Length: 101
Image (cartoon, rainbow, N blue to C red; front, side, top):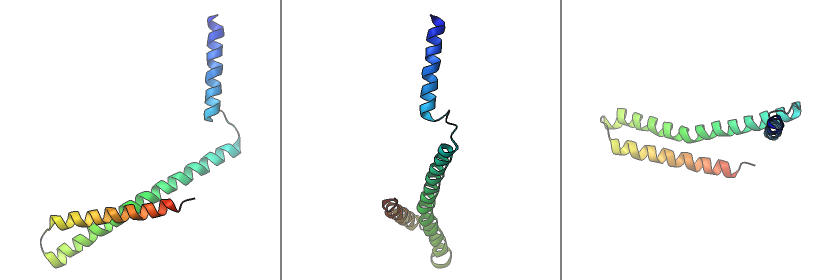
């Protein structure tokens, strides 16, 4: 009785793992999964650059102004520049995501 239940449990577990794709030996299925994974990885990496780029650019612009124009630190201007960079990054990201097919 116990062996039958154990065998039944193993079969159910195998079927569940098969549905999850662990026992698929088809090369085409693996290549399709790899392509999908690579696509989403590239999209995520691009999103990171889209968000971080304007923030870093505005930080560099603040550092340039601080060195040559202000001669002292102005933290409120730094915060404003960082918010503008973040807003610009999110705006570019939204425009990019709405165009993804």
